[in-house]
Image (cartoon, rainbow, N blue to C red; front, side):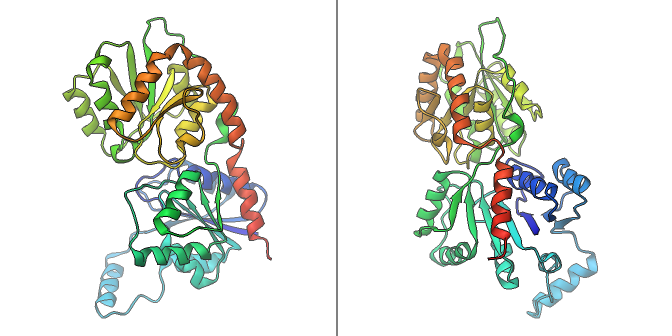
Length: 382
């Protein structure tokens, strides 16, 4: 069997959206099937993609590879006289691979259309994966009709939360009969050992784990809550884990609000279990998500969470039992949820233990293996 994987994420070399397809890729390759990978070009491929090449001898095709000056000039001249280049590199790659199934993985929802169109033109069966979605992006009528046609042509449309599937169906005004919800998290933390923090200074510690990108992750909402008078003297330390394009802006916001002793920046940390050995609970003020890896990882490590009611967050938490859910991604709802959580902070450990048990009933141990099984089944000739 031949399975091809394409990642369309172009904003960062690596992110949580890449875990599902890459782990499925490893599973498919380890079972002896032929695998092809197309990934965005970066000065250096992420270690996870390099490992696919090293471990399984996969020749990674780099999307958007830079052309020479003469090639760029030729492309411009051809476009000016309205003659398209004979064939693009992506289509040529797909023709040469000729997979039994193409898996198109996307960090957002309205992404991957060129690959879907190419697969349809070349007669290659494909599946489409959407990670995040947001209520502020709606397609025009013409775009929606295009997307309906493309999604109907897929053998399966995968989403990582029911919330995002329902949102897209609303945005299109169309029910997707070939849609399915799958999990996206790393199997490495299933048996994680994250002991409860042993600090004796009386300070409660919250971890905010995610890209430093307020438009999606909402760290500014958290700053707005913590600058309120009632939080100024509470024994609380919030650690921001991650990197991103708005780090300097967030640092200025923290400084401008006099929160340097309340909020600290910890950068990217590879040892996820260590984050939870150092912190009592997760705070996630996101404006939009899929089903965040950071949330599932925190629950697997026995930590409760304070989240906004976006995408799949409320699908894995029960308010007041395993976590706290702000009704919306806005300052007042987040402040209410944080206040409720603070008032029962002595229960956080118990709630985290219950969350750890519950999440293992809600998601599979090995999502990559589950997806690999689905892909191989769909690739089997009908």
